[in-house]
Image (cartoon, rainbow over all chains, first blue to last red):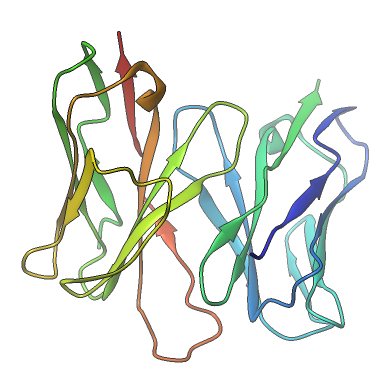
Length: 108
Length: 117
């Protein structure tokens, strides 16, 4: 069974700070997605990475897929209060597997 | 295209009642997925369809749960004899379903929040 772990589980920072959250597995994934979810809503796709070592940037967000396609990171520069939410990674392959998420709170 | 839609957004029911949820996927998407999400957790896979065929069911999907996608378009998820433990957010997602494609990204609906009293 493919499993994804995310760390940290919770993160509370001040507006303007930088942060990195991690998604790790012992399994290889053909692709990996990052989603952000707000309370009472479905997850919203941020990015899909498919190539080992791939780096994608989305404004202040930088996503990296590990060389071995077993892990990924999300780095946010100069966090804003609007970045608050649950960040989920999900791995593609035989089945779609979600990590438990990192709950981020950005305080003004 | 308006994305994935789900109906209703909220459902409150009494234990023992049956409930049915509907999902309308993105129109050109062949695959449709159902997930359950409880507070503080990531979504857990329940089942998925390739067109009208139900290809996989999780062990989480007990006999009280049934899903259909009769014409390969919208899908319904029915829970019979609901229990308090069924209270959760039920999420639907759809994807293109590219055969062998590594990046078959799923797009999610807003979810149906079920509360069983």
